[in-house]
Length: 76
Image 1: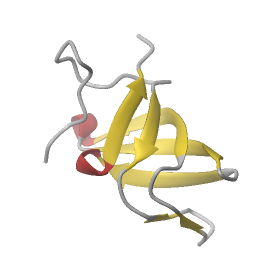
Image 2 (image 1 turned 120 degrees about the vertical axis):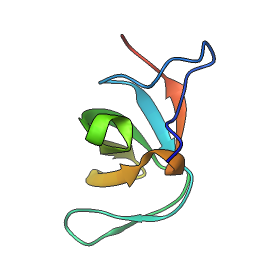
Image 3 (image 1 turned 90 degrees about the horizontal axis):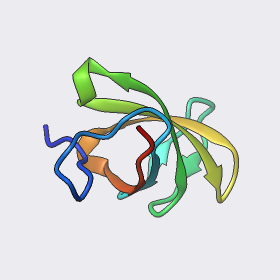
């Protein structure tokens, strides 16, 4: 799997801001649309997937594979 990387080539860290590349189903069953943004709150399997707390367009939590994320801001 491809890990999302910052412009400097480093892997995404906790609390980075990301956008979904594809629609995802939230933990409570809502469809979260591509382009929704949120904050990484957990890194799974060494960066193969991430738990993201989505805030836009509505509050939701999703687990997303790395190749389905675009990095907006990374806080390390």
